[in-house]
Image (cartoon, rainbow, N blue to C red; front, side):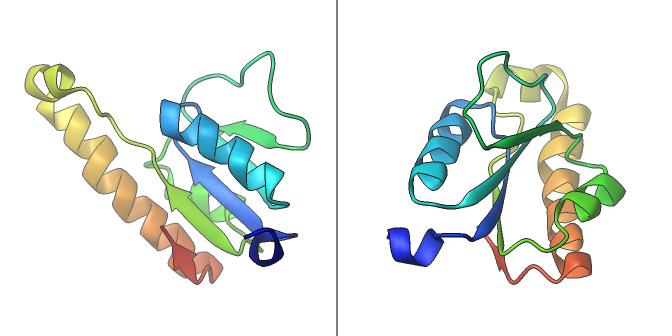
Length: 116
């Protein structure tokens, strides 16, 4: 796996979540150059050599800028709480549906060939 990821530039959305945090560490250990995006603040203790940025997943302009010259995007950002989706379905839909659309548009605009 290291041979395929070594030097590859990967953006991870939702990088501060449980899966995102572990994925960022794994990608980094495999030699990828990782840019971690999340709507929450950057952790005070963050992995070395990982660029952490705050980004609203629905901001196509910001996402497009972050995705320039990137090999792949791993899209994990979402509002995952079932209760939150019941209590605030509009905000959940905005983040989950429009956020995914924004990631896909940023990938298209930036020429990113792989979105996972």
